[in-house]
Image (cartoon, rainbow, N blue to C red; front, side, top):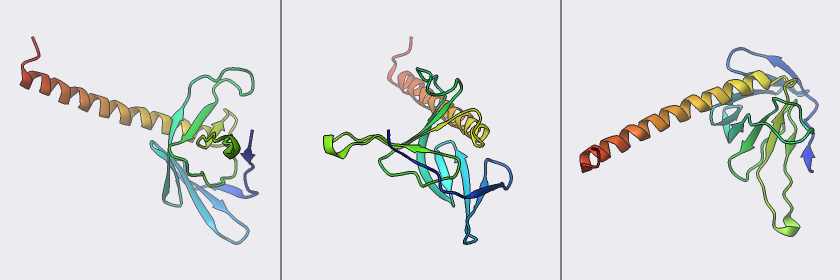
Length: 144
């Protein structure tokens, strides 16, 4: 499995919503926020989806969360996160980046919050779609 180790930077909490500031030796700061549709880093959204499904095997502890990149772009290096990607160009096998967040990870609670935000967003979308479908059925006379 190929993975990129996080860069050696320090973190300091900056407030609500899972934001963090990354302090680099050159004085550069990076804000990291986990939102319902991905990870925002310095205001740039890296689209992703989340999973809290149980992983099979004993490689990861119970409660491990996963972040999957929505396209074939790469996640940037973030301290405290290890990015996995097992793509193999020689065999034409490609997959998107993924990040496993174990319960002892500093970002765990922020990712849990993002999963809840994603669920609430999807629930609203599904409810709106159901209402549109019901209205269409009534309009077409398909409801008894």
